[in-house]
Length: 87
Image 1 (cartoon, rainbow, N blue to C red):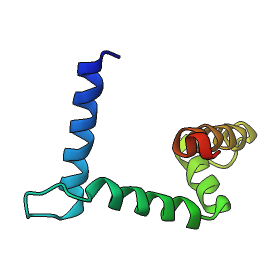
Image 2 (image 1 turned 60 degrees about the vertical axis):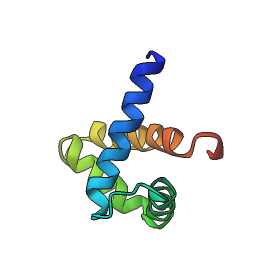
Image 3 (image 1 turned 135 degrees about the horizontal axis):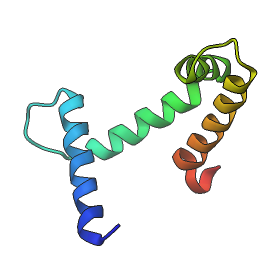
C-alpha cells in the first residue's frame, strides 16, 4: 500500500468513526482516543464463548466441526491484529 493510500485509509476510518460517534460539533478532537478506549473495553469484556458462538454462526452454523475450528482460527487472527504487540 502506498503512503497516499494509507493516508486515505486513515481519513476514511476517522470519517466513519465520526459518523458513528453521533458527534455534530465538527471536531475530531479526542475521537481516536475515545474509539481506542471503547474497543479495548469491548475486547476485554467480551466473553470468549459468546464471541466464538457468533463466529461459528457467521461461518455457517454449529453442525460442522470445521465451523468450530475455523471460528477459533478467525478469533486468533483477529486478536493478533487488534492486540498487535500486546498479544
